[in-house]
Image (cartoon, rainbow, N blue to C red; front, side, top):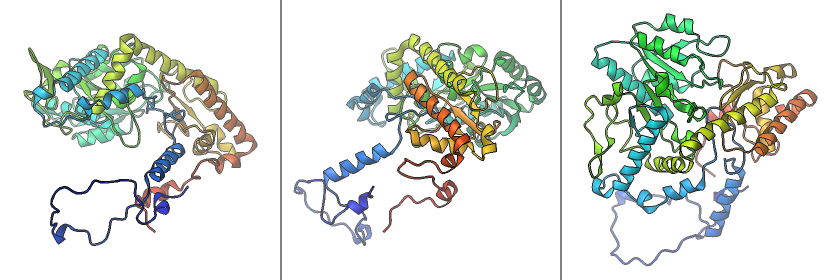
Length: 475
């Protein structure tokens, strides 16, 4: 496929501007270009067709299955997009007076109330732009809480099955991470937790279900151990898609939890954004929330800066507003009963895939999973086939690969999350492709090691791409 610059011809254009009806400005030489901007010159049909053809080459959730473990790449209903494009939402400005933003403020307030109810916690901020920033916000609130108590706690415990962003959030918040090992069942080692939970530890970041897709059955015991030592416990809400309407983090003793609205509630996800990572907290932490929060008065909604121990702002203005609109639309459509069905469908879909493939691929923890499951390709090593080869070959079937080599505690990991939005037919297509790939590993391993074969771009040197990233076209 030609690049847009290769299609370009001098003097060709895809726009028509009216004659200027204001006096020409005399722009200083200081602000003028010395050479023309290197922009492609193409007609409107050319640019439209070029972009459409590019979109067909790219894989996306509207095109086919996207089983990225831990990423919850569910289908985004188009009604969400229609709501986000309403002029009253898309054309407002954060510097407008509050009196002209009442609809937007009500939407944010109501969304916050829904989210609080889902997790049964006391207060919420909608500011964080993604899950990692939600983690940072929550742990920063932990830091402020202990600073106010004049307790110089230094550490945060992080299970070895946690998301990779957890240690970074801990470091950025001024703490040091300590790894909490898993037991033979892939769950938190309770005895190790008791040993590590000292007076120097501020708390624990727990992912539940963890990144193995397993539910931490001893969660209440875990939260009690942390609280007995005066610590706080945070739920990494990246896997909340498994818990909706089934159990509430507040009931399990969590002090804070973040939501990935762009995952759990189906707003566009991937390519670096957009995202939203609201954080809900107990009454104990309410006074440390970022400002402003969204409050409801007698006759109107307003931005409340009266948060006495606030950690300040973590995001410009009020967060990624149009992501909040999309999540609000999704929640209003599915309702409370729909939330339960989401999690039940996600859990059923994941177990259907894992149980169907566990004879072809190694299953490191032989237990039913929640919304995602982890297989391993380590039984292919005798054929000199790696998990990466399986992932690359899967692209030839028009399917995106699962997450590979994560979690780190599983060798040659294949982390699969089908989400609740996929049909049995799609799951069967994936299972059939994975089964065929396993057979190919025995009969023709070179086919996998040289894959993909049918994609627009063949296997890349990914290390070279990272070290020599080129984002600008040059002749």
